[in-house]
Image (cartoon, rainbow, N blue to C red; front, side, top):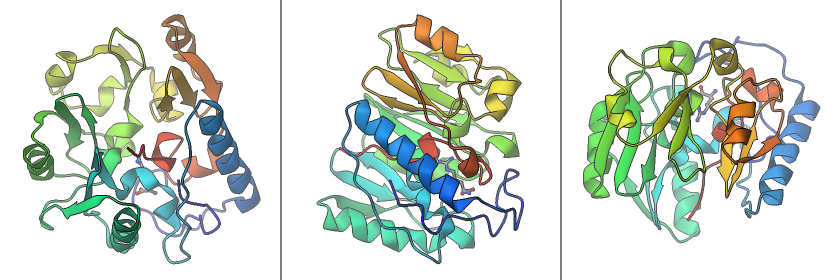
Length: 259
Ligand code: ARG
């Protein structure tokens, strides 16, 4: 995670961000600490990279890159507002013992926001922030089979805003159907038992939940799909991160899983 002391909404690069909207920083810090404590309670250790006054979105560490064992490929941010984060993350990963690589700079890619490693597969999405070519490059580099879908709704601009795999033995995943191009989910349906969430849930960023062991940490207790996820045997936790939704991010955006 990255500490939130410089978090604010000062530009708009997704439909959630209203330029100049006021963020209650004290509340944001409390919510961030609440998420961190919940993650620790679920059994994970949290490492914290300091915030940076120039980069308010550095708090969304999911976008730092994609990790496979001790190998990381750093993001190539689409918008110049975030491009300066790349070197900050690159240095952190180098210092912390990772082998760090880059994707050719002409291919945009935004890390765990748009892709993750799942067994021998690279599950990813493209179309809004990341390019298909970047996903194919990563699959090749990590020797994984690409399973890729196309995003079509600007409001759900990263895969982690509209899809999350659950910690069940039946490979369940929650997703928001309207975020994906028609038919582009066939690659995912080979791998996952897909459970649709409502528009209401999608707008609360229900899919931007964090999975740790058998726990799923949701950003609000008003999410309808929670009952179903509980029935599947997952332990449910809530970490309200409403201040961060003003920037288009919830629980999953605020973390990246290290190996
Ligand atoms: N304001 C940030 C942006 O638009 C939010 C990033 C959320 N991250 C995520 N993994 N979905 O870039």
